[in-house]
Image 1 (cartoon, protein in one colour):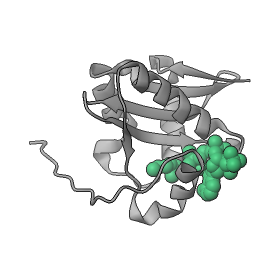
Image 2 (spheres, helix red, strand yellow):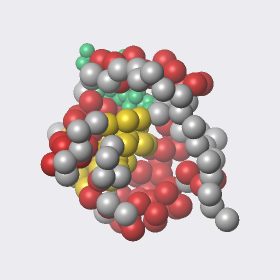
Image 3 (cartoon, helix red, strand yellow):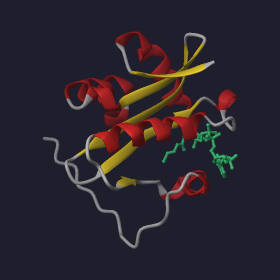
Amino acid sequence: MVDIQVYRDSHFVGVKAVWEEAFPNDSPWNRAEVAIRQKQAVQPDLFLVAVDGGEVIGTIMAGYDGHRGWLNYVAVRGSHRGSGIGAALVEAAETRLREMGCTKINLQVRMANRAVTRFYENIGYGFDDVLSMGKRVAG
Ligand SMILES: CC(C)(COP(=O)(O)OP(=O)(O)OC[C@H]1O[C@@H](n2cnc3c(N)ncnc32)[C@H](O)[C@@H]1OP(=O)(O)O)[C@@H](O)C(=O)NCCC(=O)NCCS
């Protein structure tokens, strides 16, 4: 049975494996060693994992900036896709964000990964009439 839990250190190896499969060739600053350490310092309770028989099979990293909620690292092991785990992870994050007062949740999908928008549309997300911009501010 799949259980959704707040991330703990014992989940690290499993999360890293999920991400390496789901996001191959990701940027160095998105690697598990970096991203998890940073998330442990800010709203750690919004980093959730799906666990099946002790094995991490899915992840979601959410955040609330006081105005909008954000979803990142939505991923399920290839072997476990198509059985509702991705949707359950998003719903669990939505519940926690709503409890914090969040009224709108945003997410970004890479252009190269646009097929995944069908997953999000299936669970109620729509396209906003916006362009996404970003800037790296790390020294
Ligand atoms: C996207 C992802 C997390 C979905 O996880 P999942 O556990 O397979 O999704 P679910 O089984 O909960 O699917 C929920 C619904 O979306 C649909 N769906 C899932 N993936 C889909 C896809 N690629 N295209 C179309 N529909 C999809 C399912 O059929 C289901 O619909 P239903 O409720 O009508 O049956 C998973 O495919 C994944 O890890 N992909 C690689 C990482 C990735 O690209 N993440 C997104 C970054 S923005």
